[in-house]
Length: 199
Image 1 (tube, one colour):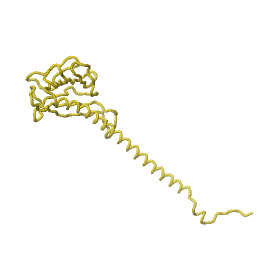
Image 2: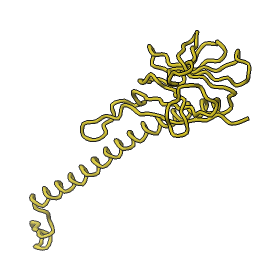
Image 3: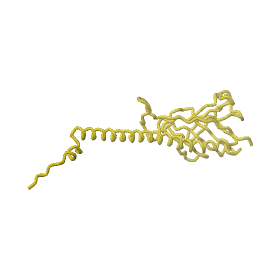
Image 4: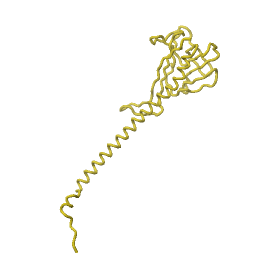
């Protein structure tokens, strides 16, 4: 019987233990890098999704409000709730938590936007019907202002004023998203100015 002995060239082609350990170590480094870049990409996507959702929701709410203000016959700023609205008088700074829009000259037909401070929502109602929340998580109280051409808040309801809308939301749809080392992206603000069209 002949015993089998590997040829010298076959013995040289084998890997040593140290070579195998180095190869495994490099493979783990490549795997770790791939996993870290994948997790980083997921965090970036999560942040982008939250910001996009916040912008989209705010845009939808502002579009309806903008269309109603632009087509209104008259707009009044004051304080109000589901059951009542009090317009600010002359020589009072025109900034408040409620906005009443009159689409026609009939003052019995109106659209009211008001802040529900207990629920922290912006509600919309028409002609005394039940109010519907159009935005939630609002943290500021002066949502509406009447401003002149340079942005100063006026002290009487003029015909050519712009209506400023400032909504500060206390949290986005996906909460506690880390931005930077110690900060969290938990709030955002929507600010715009709208003017009625001349008829």
